[in-house]
Image (cartoon, rainbow, N blue to C red):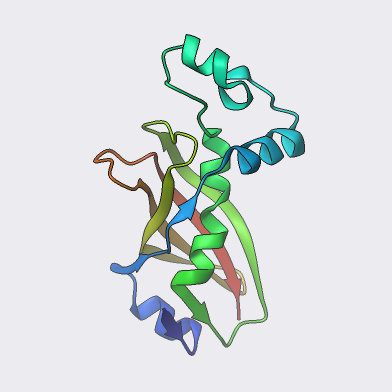
Length: 150
């Protein structure tokens, strides 16, 4: 885990990889819980037979489920001190490149790719790649942005 003692240290780290989080198993129970939480019960996510009929071999996770794991993984990659408030500022880009099949393992690799000043603080950009174990193509790539206030 990368530890930053100040936002200045974090700014100086721009352009460097933070590493990869731990592998996280995507179970049918987690997929179903996400479907319930978001009212997105698309059959390829919650109905194994329908997912097989669709040619997927079984259910797959929602793309948004995969993306929503970002904060979980970020907490594994770095910590920072010396700020008064941090806010999820959004995403500049998100692409879902390949499905995450039920019972597969996913993790996120991140690079601190940018920093720009805003009133009272800095917006940091994180290039995120959601990797699937034993799969060459990532499930998702995204650029998340987080605002930190001095």
